[in-house]
Image 1 (spheres, rainbow, N blue to C red):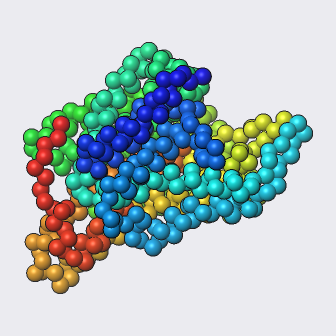
Image 2: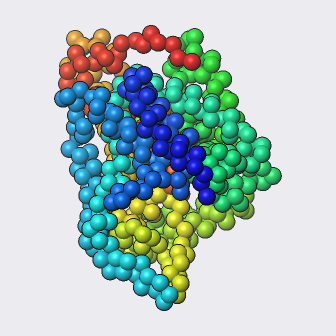
Image 3: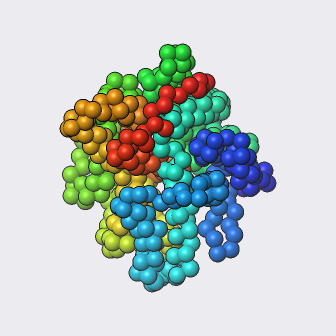
Length: 482
């Protein structure tokens, strides 16, 4: 059971966010708020559950708070929604398609010893509010973090937070995951899943060791990007930070995150920005197409299991278990493929007699497609992938404009070179999309990066049409970080 201190910390989060927005520039306050709350606040089941409202937890409460403080600090004529019509459509579908999900799921699920009620319109209200609070940080990031300077702030703050977070991570690597128990009075997952070989996977205050490893991987990649593009006086410290964080990533004992780090790290350090964008697009397309490929038996599952067995029999068994559950859950999805089964565990496989859930949903994609169908899947994954596609398209358009009838603007176009940090952000977001296939690592930080990239794509489009508007982006920063 969570202790009183856990609820006190959660309740004070909006106060801390207000203080950050009062003392820092709004963009930096947004980043520190979402990163800090994600790393420090107590995980599920700690939440406030007001009547007629979805639960306010470590995800929804900070998102709602930063959205409110962004609105209060924004200019009167600020755009609250994306300029892209496609993005607006995806947001509308993401928010309101659950209404149809509720309408198409009025029937209860009856078992021999229990039942699950059908959905009612009050459920639709709760789902819509939850969906809005899920993307509130995304909308705020789009409005506040569009420039290259803001992207540098994202990376700098992630690296600083990662270095600080590494201290409790190393404690748990040595002593086992105990921080959440010591501070908040409960253990947030199955202890057996934290054991790896003769050691432990750290969890700190996150949901699972996989989440910890993925966050450390993100901070390591951002440190490498800052090393590659930083000023001469700061590059060495970012290199040391990146090497140290990669060492922490190894100690997290999560193979997938380590593979992601090796793959993305090479691209961040060596690939051109355009190549980075190309690869990010390919990864995003794969994530979007995965359910179709899975249904068509195109995914080489047998070969993947054989490769996993070469690494570890335990890893192969875990992967086989995931594949088996996906097949089982996909059969249930086929009964309501368009708008899904809704909430209350209706998307799961249940024991016929007891009604107990017998399936395990690991990947975010199978969770979303089971609950909200293909429409919900395309809305959520489409919103996450759209910034990647838009930045990639704008990069191509700028390259073509530079080659066609723009010789009189060579100096301006040179200063409009894409942000040196955008490639790393694209790759990290794309690899997060890929990780949503085996895992459910969709966090406020994912939406933060996606929102920043969407805002940057919109700025690129505006700058392309009016080069006078590029001045805020291309001014060389004189601030020294770290």
